[in-house]
Image (cartoon, rainbow, N blue to C red; front, side, top):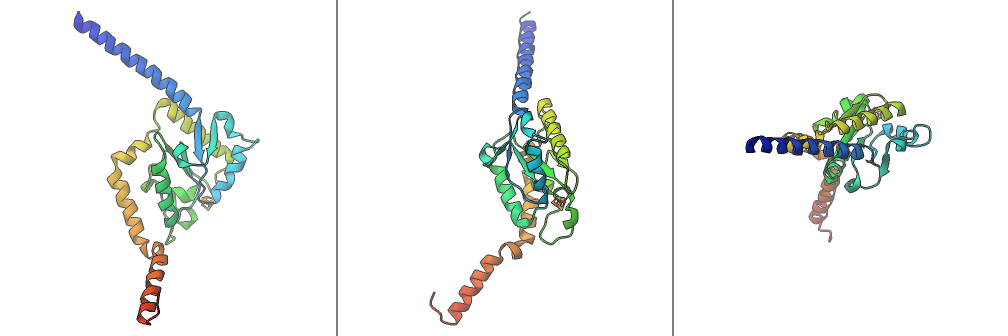
Length: 208
Ligand code: SF4
């Protein structure tokens, strides 16, 4: 009898938890802050998406200037290796739960920069992506559609890519290290120039 009561109590707690999760997810999906961080030409589609014609704010999505208060990171186009460093830092500063939208062909498969020496081909290899939005560049309708899809995923509790970052950190870190190591000559060029100048001036007896 005691065991039966305990089971019933546990069931009740679980039901209440589910109800709370549903309510929290509903409020969460209706108050999304999108980080103002644009990496490529796809960013041009954001002003029309946010202003009167498509008016994404009616769904509760608004712009946010700082990563520490933002929920969504939009990677709006091609990403150079230099920019990738900033994207990773920005992503890591965002509080959980957080979501990433890879925006346009360049962010998903390199697009027209697929064989560029200093542009990455898939942002999903470096940070986890929730939604990939194809197109060059995607129309505001497509942006709106992908945001609505993300909202649905949040409501169902399925938008959990951010958890993958911690669970598979070794994978993401190895990819990040590899790309930054390959790009060292480019990323470190300013430092090298400085060292070269210092070395030359000491060889020539020039005082620093
Ligand atoms: S996918 Fe097209 S619009 Fe988007 S960043 Fe690349 S070239 Fe620009």
